[in-house]
Length: 300
Image (cartoon, rainbow, N blue to C red; front, top):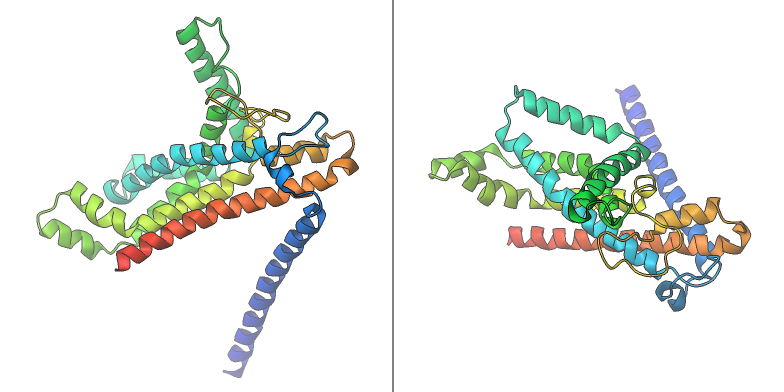
């Protein structure tokens, strides 16, 4: 008895120490970024376009490009992931070969490196779909869609985050008690009415959680957009889905690895990283706030 209590206390202590180490690492990384970028961040830095050489100017086009990327990615990926999770949870039987194939594909996609998605986006969206659209629309004379742009980058990122959305939404739908479904069907509701009125409202917070996880994953990824739409120096804002765009993560990557004078751009690197973290937090907090409002409305 004493031995089991001692073992339990040791496990609790190890868990607490591990949690504190994680928190300490997060605080240390955040503090390092803040200290390194606080002297560079200013209103002009946030609202101005970059200048030639990238040692002056601001990152406003990169902020706008990152926000547009996340929004288009969420609009494209979350509905598809939700519908897929709905099929797996409510319609597919446990012995269904189609359901097993979908789950196998989801699990496989979750383990695929991000750079592979970038190569897939280049080959499929840019060279196959985009080039085909140019051939149909302009006879191949004008190169508009058959080149990297914000639409193809967003769709590639949507594929990257799709497994996260599917898994989280399916688990949320599984938490809805079967008694709710049985009661709805017993009252004469159809299968779809039960799903629309009972299952989806009671799992809506889980659907929003899937969107939050997708935003967190997509906002910081760089590899999938390397070949599908991101540009290093592009002072103007994208005005159409066929335009290339600047992105904060790609901007940090290029400045830290390809800059001719890394020391001269170090402050910009830290400041851009801090802005990326803040933008990710704002998008996440917005989704969390929406989820809390929906949850409070359901309770009342």
